[in-house]
Each structure stands twice: as structure tokens, then as C-alpha cells.
Length: 98
Image (cartoon, rainbow, N blue to C red; front, top):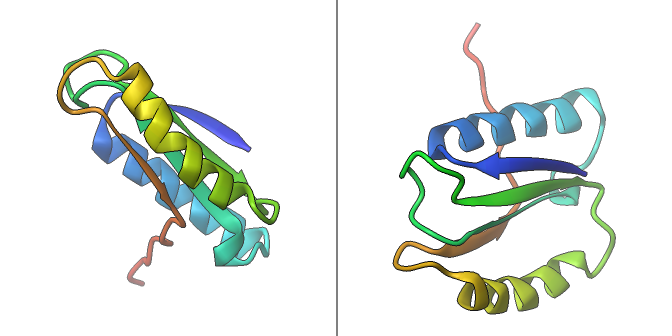
């Protein structure tokens, strides 16, 4: 499990793609077993911490369902104005040209 702050959308996307590549291609983890869960309580990009997320390698059965139920509730409970949100997904792997 890897925790990361959410301050910049591009940095988070780059981190997720690199980590997914490492876990899937180098670590032999099935793509469907890598799970990303993010929660942000304000609009991303205001220069301060907007939220946090975790990347779970080899996520146990049922974790995605529990997060899918909890994240909308947590988002509504913790939001600080417009722009709050959440996501739950399996990351894509970066493809490099040779």
C-alpha cells in the first residue's frame, strides 16, 4: 500500500502510472489487482494539500466495494466548498516508445 498527497493532478497521474508499471511489469501483479483510491476535499490546484490517496497492490477481494461505498460518504462529510471529489480505479500502465 502506498500513500500519496494530492496537490497536483499531473504529478499524481505520473506517480500512479510509474507505480503501476513497476508493480505490473516488474512485480508481476495482475493489473486488476492494483487499486487507486483518492479523496480530495477542495478543488485541486490551489497550491495547498487538497486530499490524499492510496495505491493498493494486490488488493483483497471486497476492498473496492467497501471503498466505493465509503468514499462518496466521506467526500460529502469532509468537503470544503466546490471541487471536492473522489475516484476509485485501476491505473493504466505508461507505454514507452523505443
